[in-house]
Amino acid sequence: MSDRFDVAVIGLGGMGSAAAAHLASRGQRVIGIESHYPAHALSSSHGDSRLIRLGYFEDPAYVPLLRRAYQNWRSLEMRTRQQILTVTGVLQIGRADSAIVAGSRAACQLHDLPFEMLDPARVAERYPAFGLDADEVGLLEPQGGYLRPERAIMAHLKVAAEGGAVLRFNEKVTAIEPDDAGVTIATPLGQLRARTVVVATGPWIAELVPDLKQVAQPIRQVVAWYQPGDVFAVTPDRMPVFLRDEGEAGSYFGFPAIGPDGFKVGKHCHFMEPVDPDQPNAPVNERDTALLDDFVARRLPGTAGMRRATTTCRYTMLPGEDFLIDRLPSDPRVIVASPCSGHGYKFASVIGEILADLVIDGGSDLPIALFSLAALQRARGRANTV
Ligand SMILES: Cc1cc2nc3c(=O)[nH]c(=O)nc-3n(C[C@H](O)[C@H](O)[C@H](O)COP(=O)(O)OP(=O)(O)OC[C@H]3O[C@@H](n4cnc5c(N)ncnc54)[C@H](O)[C@@H]3O)c2cc1C
Image (tube, protein in one colour):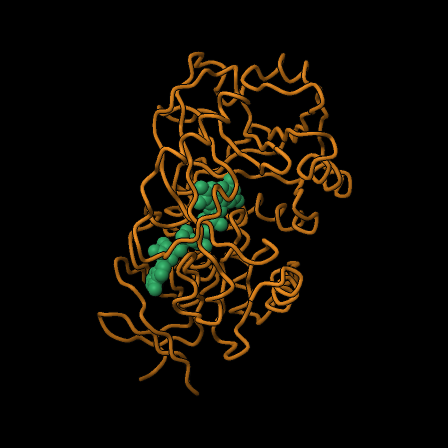
């Protein structure tokens, strides 16, 4: 059997669709295989909106990648003639010494990014949806905003197809078997050959990369949309996207109303409930909605919102909560990309470029040491996980 494709991309969600686009645009013979349909409801990349910001409180080392991600999102918009990224500013609320506020401030200062510190009165005047305690502040990063993930996936797939990629949907890859001459990829419809494989299967990553079974943990997430009494308090000009640090009680995120269901709210990691990716998500229950309703009542008093819709989604958590993008030591022709610990979508446009670099050049000039298997092993040691 001769090599038919240069590269097979398995999983065409956030990361895989971007990889297919970058690889096909750089002249690779690409096949992309997706077990469902793009941006389906069991994936990690549905639900209308994803936050994007530059002053990364998690680690300032992400900032150069974010600058590149912004450029790539804008290029994708120009290429496909649609809006994918909307800048609203991102308001990060908490005590001045909280992880989110202090971390964002440090990242902005280190990378010379604009930001503004707002006291509770100033926040109330400018953004009436939010209620701040007297000892809280708001850090406004003006370049933050939101992405439209479903639209972005379709845009990346369009670019891939225009570059000659073969895209197959509703076909699950059941095995990848490297040998001396390449890699065989098996699906229920038969086998195909490629020189290199990119495994971007999100919550299902451990099915094809069993070494990640104890490491990459899919967890259940719930988000809800609320229709406010005052519709004008939650439009993108009066309500930026936001993060809220509640200290030991965790952190929340939200988006202005960009559709008829109103504004959207979720809690990072929700209840940390592990899921089997092959099973349907457990339906949203009263405990889920009570958590989010309570947050809206306490922290968004200016909205007096009525819950209108809910959905479940999945994070794929790694020890250390960074990403994993690397070749497998057992076979460097297999490249793993995606477990992104619940904060990866904003990077999809640059992760696609990184994956193309790894496939074509064997390495990337972009700073990705943080996402290596070696870094993951160190994080596992620190987290004292399996
Ligand atoms: C509620 C929620 C809110 C979030 N908020 C943010 C945010 O504000 N900002 C941010 O940056 N990130 C955010 N994230 C995280 C971000 O959305 C994820 O990191 C990102 O979507 C992961 O993309 P992925 O390509 O790894 O996974 P997916 O998009 O799930 O793609 C994996 C694909 O692989 C396919 N697949 C699986 N197995 C196989 C197989 N064997 N054969 C073929 N195909 C297969 C699946 O069907 C799926 O389509 C959020 C996530 C959730 C759930």
